[in-house]
Image (cartoon, rainbow, N blue to C red; front, side, top):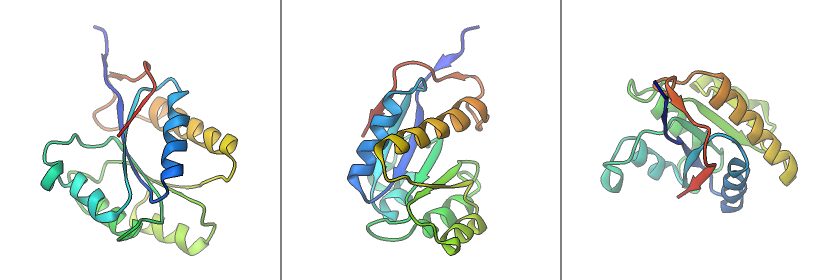
Length: 159
């Protein structure tokens, strides 16, 4: 039987729209098909994850890439909500930040983040970090509900 094909659904929570564009471009050049939803604040992220209001029928993301700097609310709120919710806690949360502060890193891991990744300054290094994340999380690791899927197709779509 041929595996089903569907994009990996990524929720990217980040206040910097340039980083969102960079992330989208980086995923376009990779073999895994992705669908990226970009949000800039914790309330919208939580509404999306909990299917509130305008997000009532959105699909559950397969992965959350989370910046520390959101326009309102905090990354800590998002991690706490995801890891404290039985229906969401299996979703990997990858914190993607320029902060090198050990306190930030420790706090994210203590709250249940699956990874803390340094966000590089150069576009080339940024693309390389995304390539490594894609290779590990989408082609090596086995995420819940995705084992039977084939993600290798058309690149990224962005909303």
